[in-house]
Image (cartoon, rainbow, N blue to C red; front, top):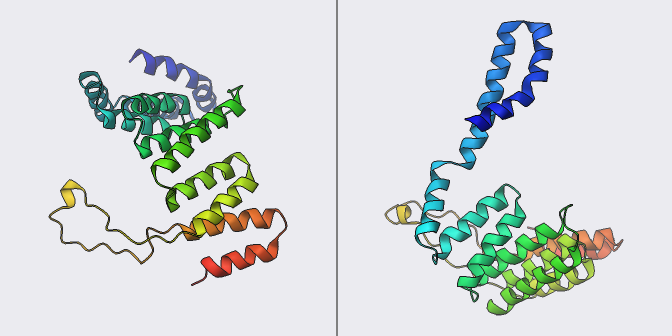
Length: 231
């Protein structure tokens, strides 16, 4: 509650300006709205589910899923340093998990592109080390090749990105049934999925065409779109 009141003090100048135009009643309404917004932000950060997650991590320190979920929460609010810390903690417990290596690499890529980090090149190299470990654990799967290309594309290494996009385009993937969640096991609803939902060649082709178009190779860009993205 002390944090809410201290945050609301920052809104007083704005509320005071509205008092001069609309009177005391509207000032009170505006200030109440701001108090509600700040309270909502704080309650969201310390929600019931977050408290349960923290309690689970304290009770079961060697349990990986709560650590991964915590990292996802930090990623969702763009706190990539905290997310990388959680993902690395999960990596120590299960270093051979491809998904954890992907999470660590992605978090380090996002961290390297921030404004406050000084050793950006070193951070990118570390991220690529985890991503290539993920690629090896996935046996050079199409999805892993696409993620490597996407990482290169994200940091501006378009030449390397194009190489791995082309590798992803050369791999064909069969569709696999999507596992149901526990509460969906008894559901009779049909999965309305079009053929090719496990294939990322269209995504790879679209990103590759952006690289070709940016480099001035419009003919190559059109050919890629015509081959992979035309119905």
